[in-house]
Image (cartoon, rainbow, N blue to C red; front, side):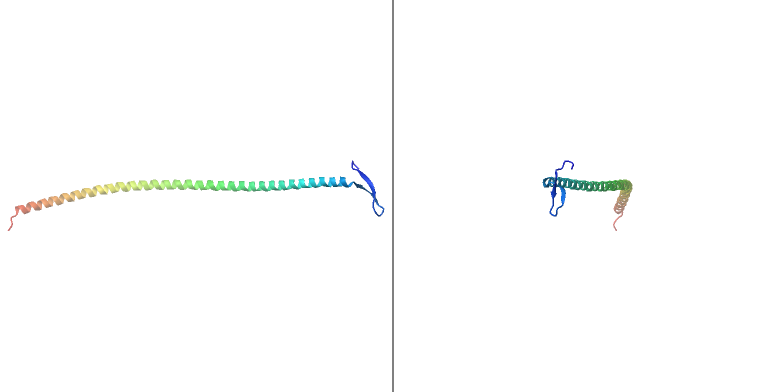
Length: 137
């Protein structure tokens, strides 16, 4: 049938049936085995590709989530840096005002010290002159 070599055999018990030759059947079986093995390898490759694609999709989602978190962190860092800069400017302004006050207080204290020193010199000079003009008794 369909290009196969067939012949009739008589089996023990007297039955006659159509059968392929052993060589042809063996050859057909080998071809079927190769096709099955090839299909199995193809299925395994397809499964591996599907797993790899799934892992790649999961990695892409994780990367996107990490990028969102990094963006949020960068925004918070920027906000924090702005607040820090504002606080630093305020500290500089306060320090400058304190310096102006300290310089003014220092100048006033120096003037008071000079005035007190001058009063002392005047008082000492008057005392010295009084003792010169007074006669010892």
